[in-house]
Length: 195
Image 1: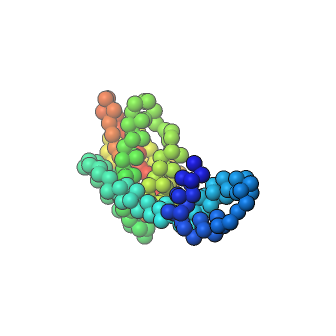
Image 2 (image 1 turned 45 degrees about the vertical axis):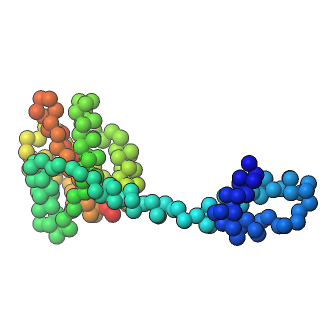
């Protein structure tokens, strides 16, 4: 095993290997210290010599998340437009949709329908997922139930200080999902992010 670690260190970062392994060592000292030194050297080489980093991998993850497909219904597109029209009327930036966020919104709608509830259950998990996938620095969410039209859902949100704060907040992107249960009642999830 020590030989394998030595070879791994030689391959990953030869400079560290040759600095840590002097050519002449007493056999007893080498047997006592070498295993510990090899593990430390290997760990150090992963930090200082490795070409694989989270920065190298992050763009692939972000690209995959950004390229997520989502088929918006006419009601969802209407709600997107209504929210952006409201924001622009206040001098705020319009929000860009990101399909990945709409997929997460849809997953929450499906959860609420399956459990016959209106809530923010598992928001922390959704939020962390979006933060990791998209590099968001802030994530908020609005939900609604049983509004026939997108404009009626928006008007209800605007009457609620917390929901209104999300719609008018310092965000850059969002996602929307509207799903119906078996009785035709609509569930709305609107997730806002700041990148």
